[in-house]
Structure formats: C-alpha cells, structure tokens
Length: 181
Image (cartoon, rainbow, N blue to C red; front, side, top):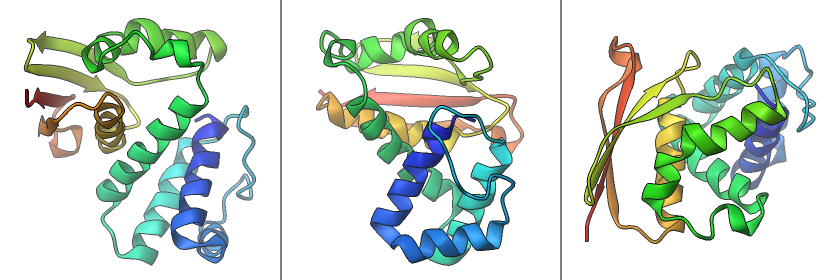
C-alpha cells in the first residue's frame, strides 16, 4: 500500500487522538517499517491493518467504524492534493462512474504495482447507483467513508448502504448510493 495512505492515517490519528496515541500504537504494533512512512514508498497492507486494529483497542471503536471515518478523512485530503480541474466539471455520479476508468487508471499509471479496488457500476438511475466493490484488501468500509465525503463535497444528500459485504462471505460488496432530491 502506498505510503500516502499511512501518512494520512498518521495525520488523522495525531489530530484526533494526539501524538502520544500514535506513538503508543506504533510501539505496540512493532511494524517492519518502524512506523516511518514516506508518501511515495510502498508498505505491506498488514501494517495498515495492525495500526487500525490497535487504534480500535485504544479507542474502543469497531474496526469497520474506524475505517469508515478514515475513508472520510482520506477522501477530503486526497481531494485537496489534486488539481481543481480533476473535480470541477463533475457531479457525484460522474465521479462514481469514472472511478475505475479514470481515477484508478491514473493511479496505476503512476504506480505499476498499485492494486486499487475495482468499483463497477452495476446499475444507475438519477436517484440510485449500485457499485460492485472488489478488492483483496477488503477495505469496503473505507470506501463507504470515501463515498460519504464525496457526496458531501458535491453537496449531495444521499443515503449509503452495503447490502452485500465481503466480510459476510460474499465475493464482493454492493455499495448503494441513493439520492434524496
């Protein structure tokens, strides 16, 4: 996983829980990286899971809830780092339809080893979109948090649901975004 994901996780934990909590988590996790992350480098996915698992213990918050909160934080901060024209002409629906064909394709161009999730539009209308999420990393709750922030960025009043989930034994997740217009 790219270091930028870890650096944003560190920023979120330090801003919401304090530096001491981040430091304590790193001590308990005994990571191969030593907890020193460079945005452009790659790190084992297991390090992210170890950090989030320890954060769950420290905060007494469910791992999936933490991943959702981190997804919200991550989207906002990744968005800030992109040129404005990337999102300027888009609607939320345009963004969601272009995740795999535009955004994830660009990620793969920048990093040949990147393994972003597959997000395929299963069906779409003006009021509802259903995405099929597939990823060996099983970070669907992080994806839901990112969707929540994306909807807020586009000032869309939506309801998010995940009627099918990898964590419940399915081979993919179904992410349903319903507009309230």
